Length: 329
Image (cartoon, rainbow, N blue to C red; front, side, top):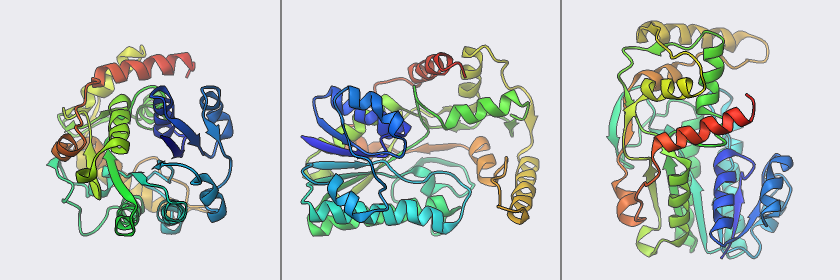
């Protein structure tokens, strides 16, 4: 099988491209940072440079491949609707169109459980529990892009969408690096009582889910799947495990959730009127994420993808810490 992995210069796309090569697949990669793709090229991947905003380039990328694993897109909670729409929805439309024109058999679309975020606690949330209104442009455009991908099923493209929660391991540049940076500046606080339990996903388990999506039978097609380790853990226990592993003092100071939310609201308001609309250091949604329970029901993935998360979170955290130390960060 020959596959295309978009967004392969990022954490998830890069780790899956490497995993796919190890499984004996022929892999073509595309990503914004060519230098980050050189290790994949050295392992045998075919690199095709170019911007996914160029439809002709996307058609070339999809030529002669059996499947596309679409990991590219914009992430975050700050920015204009136009920015997120272009990077998530329009880009996915281009990928879907190219898959159909080049007769690609299957598309595995990387979505996000951010579509569920509404500032409230959720335990065991299922794939159908999509809110009527989305908390931000990221969540709304990720859901729109998912609908675009899944909608291509009626035209003969086999489509699956995955919604992995808090993916970590070696190469994670999002979750723990941000917390480490805030802690070094003395800004990290336990929001609320610090007892909230949340889902994480080892990148190794996500690799298994993505690979299973490439191989899954007809019954699995046309659906979105929650992906996690399936074992919600206290968020701040996990954060302090990482900090201690990196010889940093644990977070012990608390901030009441209402105060944190109010400060984030003020910070966002100030940034909206500043020139260039710089990203706030605090976000209301971020405060909710750090204070509220949040876990996914992964029974659909277990049933249709035979998903059985084997890699423990603690191993993924150790892997991240080893990688972080090697970088001298």
